Image (tube, helix red, strand yellow):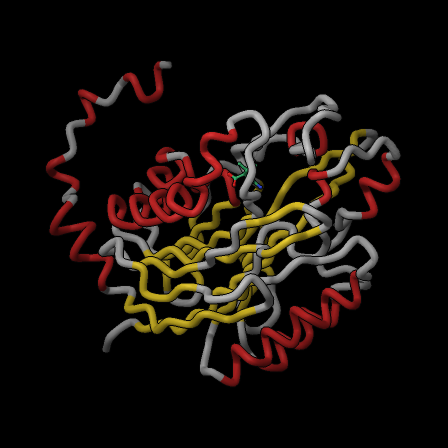
Length: 303
Ligand code: CDV
């Protein structure tokens, strides 16, 4: 029996600052319904999929920052998403800003959950690689304040047995780091669910702007091939509150081939029937464990 999982990358167009959580959740529900109609078992939403990408703005009022975060999931405004997914019998991966109260301490993470077809949360990940800066840079056209608003993830790179696949999650900047994929690949991961918000312009290094799409695709293809994993990458795309984001959602096979690609910068589904057994060719055939030379890799963890 082939192990086929039909998956949708559920790209989102921009979310405006004035859009309410219930309005965004309606958009997500609409995409889930379409994905189900097309036979999908799982849909992947972008990073911070419930709000505009607020680290692009300098915000001093902590209450306002926290208004972009979820203190419970599902919560009162996201319950309908979980209920509709369970009713449809479709799983999903959702990026969100997480607020946790631990005694006196309030902690915030850039997080994602994976939800089974019965609406249960079965996996949780907190973004490890936070890009940007913590200080205000008013001369830049927009900010990148993830280092101010979030802590680095403290859950490592967990792999979950869900949808019949060894499944991991990455969030945006994680996809540029070989270590992220490697930590998943070394656990036998077959499927990576990834959401992102990538601006076209990098204020400190504008020479990379013309290469933004290329570097995005290069990272996904290398990560997929070198670890023999499927990668389903869903963007928040288009011009969001004046910030142009690249879009370019795609599904990449363990061969490194792009098998589905977004053609718009709006809400869009791209769908592929992912054969999980394709991973074996690369995990066992091209990169067999017996060929690894761990005695030569010490520098990876010593520096
Ligand atoms: N949300 C992100 O992590 N964005 C980064 C940008 C800021 C470089 C990215 O790697 O796409």
